[in-house]
Length: 456
Image 1 (cartoon, rainbow, N blue to C red):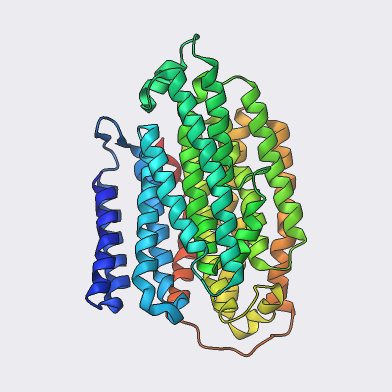
Image 2 (image 1 turned 120 degrees about the vertical axis):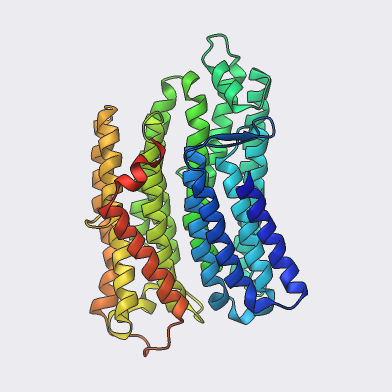
C-alpha cells in the first residue's frame, strides 16, 4: 500500500515542481525517489499484507512484479528529457503521466478485488492514450492515439462486462471469495461467460492474436519513447495481471479453455513472426515481435500453478532487452520522419557500442545464448513439456528459429551496409540506459535462480 501512495505522491510532486519552475530537478529527483520506493517495496518481499478489506494484497507475486515495473519506469523516465528536448517545458507532464501509469500498473498486480483491478487498468490505459497522442503536431501520433483510445475503450467494455457477470455469478468482487466459490460444482454459467469476456479484454491489452491488429499501427504512429513503454512496461503489466486473474479462476474453467489458450499462443507466435519478416519499419517489426512474445507468455497460463517464476523471468528478460533496443532506436531515429531499417545502415561503424548493444538485445529476443532470453525460453519449454504440451513446444521452437530471420535483417544492416549518415554526438543517457539494461539482461542469464525462485 505504501508503494502505491509513494508513487502517486511522487507524481503530484512533479506537477508541483513545475509551479516553482524547477524543471531541471524533476527527472533526477524522480529517479532517486523511484529507487527509494524500489528499496521500500523490496523490504516487504517476504511479507504478505492485505489492506482496505482485501482491496490491495501485496504478496511475493505483487512485490516481485512491482519491483520490475519500478525498474523499467526508472529507465523510461531517464530517457524522457533527451527525447522531449523540444518540449522540455512540458517535462513535468510527461514524467508525472508515467508515474501515474506506474501507479495503475502496481494496482493491477496487487489487487485483491476486481474493482481495484479495473481502477488500475483504467489508470494505466488513460495514461497510455495521452502518451500515444502526445505529439500533437504529428498526424501519425494523433491517429495512433485515436485508434488506441477507440480499441482500448472496446476492450475495457469487455473487461467491465466480464467483471459484472462474474459478480452476478459469485456475488462478490473479492478474489479470495471468487477463487473459493470457483471450487464449487454449482457455480452459475455466467461465471464462464464473464471469464471469457475478461480474457478477451486482457488478450487485447497484451496484443495477442487475434486481438493484435491495433498494435502495429499504434506502435508506428506513437512517439518512439511511448512505443518503448507500450512494448515493455505496458505489455508486461497486462500479462502479469492476466496471469493473476487466470490463476484465481482456473479452478473452475473447463478443459476447452486449455485448447483455446494453446490456439491463441500458436496464432500469436506464428502471425507475429511471419508478419515481422515482411517489415521494413523497425517499430512495426518490434510490434510484431511483441505479438510473437505475447504468444510465448500466454503459454505460462497453461500451467499457472507452477509457472509464476517462469513468467517473471521471461517478462524481465524480454523487457530489459526491449529497453536496451529502444534506447538505440531513439538515438538512430531522432529527428527523422521514419524508422526504416536503412537508417541503421553502417551503425556498427559510426557507433560500435550502440550497434553492439542493439545486437545483444535482438539476440536475446531471438533466444540466443548467453542472454537471458535464451534461458527464459528453455525454462518455459521445460514447463510445457512437464505439462504434456509437446506439440506446442515444437511449434514454439520453430517460431524461435523463424524470428532469427528478421532480427538478423537489422543486424546485417548495421554491419554489412554503408553508413547513411556520419557519426553524431550520443547523449550520455542513451548509453547509460542501454548499457545498464543489457548488463542486467546478461546477469539474469548468468544467475537465473535469483528471479526464478523469487515467487516460488
